[in-house]
Length: 228
Image (cartoon, rainbow, N blue to C red):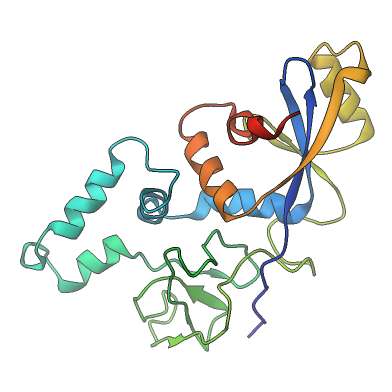
């Protein structure tokens, strides 16, 4: 079974108008895009749990549904395991995929289980593989699975850079596409175009997750305070 990729620093290079603080787009490598794409695979109950237990906070009333499941006595469920499945869905994924999980011991932590027959892991207390239903064993590594190690793992190829728009539209980047985008924004003086490198980690991931459910100016919402 493959080795677990350790956490490494991720970043975005944001291009913006210095006067208006308007974000044009961000440049990202494959690992940063993998980090963003992995948000799509998080179960809703994991999303609500991560946000509600963080300083970011949960939006809407979806967390009330999760709390209802948590507070409902097991005698009301058709099967004993149904409550556990709803609260901690067996989230299996390739070892090569990135994972949006806290690594700070002060935050909520998850036990990780692995299947010896399949290259999958789980962040649930459920202990059966979703493919073969064999018992899984607890992963004893020192770190939680995080972002890819850059050795051909993840979702997208590493040979190119990517553009991430303010509304999280992701495209391959080229010199021509960058110039065309700036023209689309009606940029006439490149002297007003500034760039800044920002870290992309667990906290930023949570803020992006929340902002993406509130509107379409995600990068602006999360990183506006860093634009100078």
